[in-house]
Image (cartoon, rainbow, N blue to C red):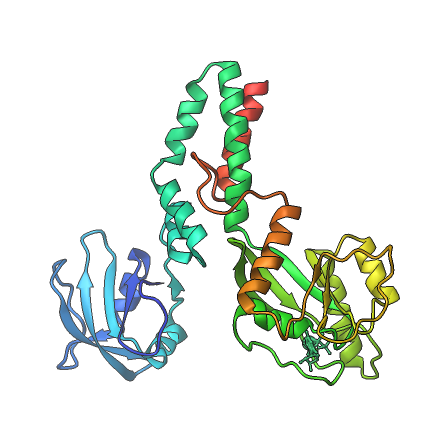
Length: 340
Ligand SMILES: Nc1nc2c(ncn2[C@@H]2O[C@H](COP(=O)(O)OP(=O)(O)OP(=O)(O)O)[C@@H](O)[C@H]2O)c(=O)[nH]1
Ligand SMILES: [Mg+2]
């Protein structure tokens, strides 16, 4: 069975019974008089009682389709669906959707919306056919331009992981909350406050990021704290790292190590008297996460990342571009075949 409506706590749930499940599903329906459900002509909605394991569950509307499938309109309570799931496999329906339409629905910010609207003007498949029909050198140039646009377009769609790292109490969770515009995680003066890594999506300078707040590095007595620090280390290995340093204490040996491995360095707490900052330690942003406005912080961090990832200003990319891995693979395979 396929659930055609989004999950929720109320309203109506519409479930599509597939042709192969029809007999089993109809066996669970009774007329209002308790008689077995008759085979009905398609298209006529009828009320029926749904019975699962001898228990009357719900009064449902039954709509048979000519192609052998049947719709059941249930009361949308999760309890009713849960009862149906005890007897049948109910999966969410996945409707085929063009990547540009998906982006239009899921856009986190105006830049993603603008890109989705731009890309909807073109048929990507039609564009591939146009490319395939071009002569050799012209096609190479057009394809290289499309791959260039696709790089920027995919960066609009696929969130890059950005892990906040640093010593305990440096201000990672404070920065995390500011970048999200809300108090998502606990902050406070007690070192080692954050234990579990928390991930949230947002856009910075128009590009999507999975922001991850992690446990700070520092002394820990409990096994659970050591594990939390290990999780942070593993997360850092698969993403960009935003290293938060408490500038009133200065960078630690661990901070210097992360900076050497390419982390973006934020010197935080510049509202307090500063400790010496070693000349060979990079610093990409000096700020006070407490005092700076969230907008300013988001812009500064976003621009820093955009420039270092060599991404153009977010928004339209100026021509058909791949918006998912499949489209990119199709584009690339056309280039490979052209090279043969
Ligand atoms: N003066 C000052 N205090 C700050 C600033 N940023 C954060 N703090 C304070 O520093 C303390 C620690 O902040 P957190 O964000 O919880 O630090 P953390 O890095 O997440 O710490 P752990 O979770 O223990 O690793 C809190 O009391 C914050 O209010 C800042 O820019 N200036
Ligand atoms: Mg924290």
